[in-house]
Each structure stands twice: as structure tokens, then as C-alpha cells.
Image 1 (cartoon, rainbow, N blue to C red):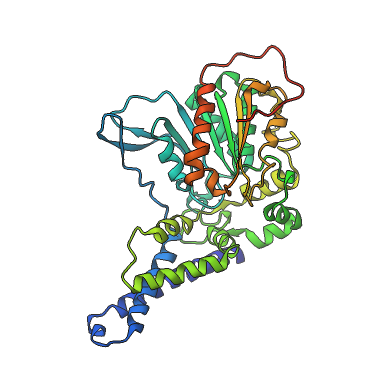
Image 2: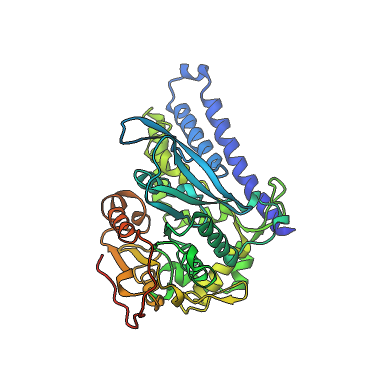
Length: 427
């Protein structure tokens, strides 16, 4: 019960700060105060406005904000976000551009379940929707999932991906971003044995911890430094009475957000102080650069406790994917069974979360895949976020990924010989 009380305490603190911000903004905005030439009232109103928005965004799922798309005919076409498969812990959704011919490239974006919503990949979706049929995994906030729906760990996540791939069919090209890369690789290997005809055409792994020990970072050091008992004691709580998932064990989004922000505390403090000054001077707007970034960054979701703990223990500590020892439903998944799915890895040279070397390790695991089906790329100036969003993605990485997709668009043929010494392609 103490865990539930802690969860409700965090929500109470968040709610109180939102109320304080709203109160300060309302009080300092009374017309009669405008007769008093004191800048403190303007600053108070600005502080209240920024504070209210900041703490209110923490419990709101962001909107995709992709409403129309201008096609080659010069007309704006509506973009309908349609569920294809609906499950308790996550859906498969499709960005359907009304009135446009079906695009030849069918792309599944596998979004991370790592504290933020799938909308974190909004710019990635926008860049691909131009000439692709885009599907994405839309994971749900664990606080809104009743306990009666059961558990959700990395094996369940993998099986969700297996079902999504079966639904989409073999002409699919998968792009896994960050955290889900090892599980997407495992799901593909699972299909290689269970239902080979349902395997995707290609698999692009972007900044994923296939082998976390290949290049140490603060994330991997933390994973090895703490014990599972310490992690469960420090990070796991029960959802409080306010949400449908009351009683479910989770890694709370608010606790994750505190960890995110502590990594760059000075920068975030300065960003909010600067924003208060801009609001005071009347220079801020509802969708300015600060609000666009923090509306997304502050919107966090709870992760199922079993998913978070099994990720740390099995992916980071035990290295089950890296050692090709991952088990799903009692069956060992052999990544070497992938023989027809083209695999490409993308890394950022300045990635301090998934350092170069961690993702490209996937190619060594694909022992049954010929060299012609393997590729890797390292973006020289990109950090972790830059390899799937921003100018590095738009100008350099996206064209290479689409080129890789096109090169592997045809139905594959089973290779007659397996490569024993895989070489990494240059693109």
C-alpha cells in the first residue's frame, strides 16, 4: 500500500503545482493590477502561465497533429489515423491519406516503450508519409490498463510485434527505433521459425541496444551497477486510485521524467527561466519552439513494472539478445535463423545513450544471412535523437533507409549457401 501512497503523493505534488500556476496566472492578470506600474505582476502572471502548462502536460497524451498532407496532385488530403489491430497494451495504427493511391512502400515504425508516447516519432512519421504507407505501434499508458488485463513483459512485447507483422503481411519494411530494436530482431527470428512467409522484407534497426556491453554508456553502467532488488525498491510503485489501472505495478512516468531532466538540469532550468521572460515581454506563443519541444518531452507514460524490470535484467544485465539466448514462450529464439530478411543498422557517432557498436552487433548475430543482405551506417554528427529526427535524419539517414528498402522490395529467395564470415556493407 505504501507504493500506492507514493504514487498518489507524486500525483498530488504535480496537481498542486498545476493549481498554483493557474492561480498565480489568474490573480496577477486581474485588470486592476494593470493600474499599478509594478513588473512583479507581469512576471507572476508569466510564471503562472508557464508553470500551469508545464505540470498539466505531464498527464496528457500528445496529439499526432498530422491532419492533412499535400499530394503530388497539389491538393490537401486528409490523414486518417486508423487502428488496424487493437490490444490492451498497444495498438497498430495506420496513417491513411484519403484519396491517395496506395504507396508501394509499406513501412512499420516500431516505437519505443520507454517513457514517452509514440508521438515522439511524429517528425519521423511526417517524413515517411510523403511516399510510404506508414504504420506504427502505439503503446498505451500502463496507468490506464486495468489489472485484469494481466502482465506485459518483453516476451509479450515480442509476441505483439509478431502478431502485428502477421497482420501486415510479408511485403512490410520494419524500422525499429532505439529500445525496441533487440525485441524487433527477436520477433523477426521468431517468425523465421514459426511462420517464414510472414517475415518482413527488410529490418532497419536505429540506435538500439542489441549488445549494450559493446560500448559502455551511463545507461549501461547504471544497469550493471544496481541490483534488481534495488531497482524494484527504488523505481516500482502501484498506480493510485485516480486511474483505471489502480493497483497495477508500474515504473511511473513522473519518476522517469525526473530522471530525464536531472541528466541536463541546468539546461532545462535555463530554458524555463528564459520562457518566463519571453512570456513577460509578450514574445512567446502557444506553439513556439519551447512549447513544441516541452509539450512532447514532458508528456510521459507509466511502463508496466514487469516490462521495465525484464528489459534491464534480460537485455542489459544478462545480454540474452547479444548472446543469442533469448526465450519467448519457452522457445529459444535463434537469430541465426533469419536468412531472407535484409538487415540494416543505423548509429549516431555522438550517441551517448546507445553508443556506436551496440546496434551494429545485430549483423554478427545474423549468421544465416548473406553479406548482400547486410548493411550499416554511422551518422558522424548525430546524437541519439538526431538519428531518427532532425536534419541528420531528413538529409542523410532517411534517403539511405529508403534506398535500402527499395533494394529489398522484391520477395526474397532462400539463399543456397550461408555466409560464415559476414562482412558489413558500406551503406
